[in-house]
Image 1 (spheres, rainbow, N blue to C red):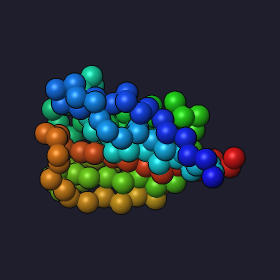
Image 2: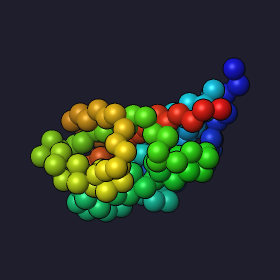
Image 3: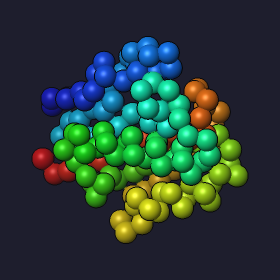
Image 4: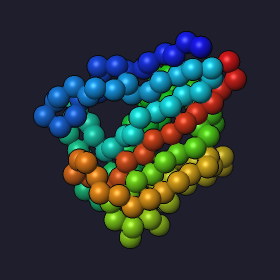
Length: 128
């Protein structure tokens, strides 16, 4: 089995430091996307959960589409929220992107490693 690594060396964290992992890995039709936060150019952006969730999901979907997959291929999404009171607001954003064909999902409260309100990752599948 060959493993393709997408975006190695492209990701930048706070302070423009390179991140030591791939944006996604792919094998046998499966795509595993690393956790995405509301970052642009290595800096957290957005103030509220709605804005940050939108940016994080769009960052995730960009990696999915750059790898040749689409939202319809997403099987599961993992969600980490800093504040559980943001759950319903996050669901509203999530529904805008996945309302017609929602994937399986886990959502937990977690302290974030960077100063943001949300992180998302996903697993996608497309028949090879």
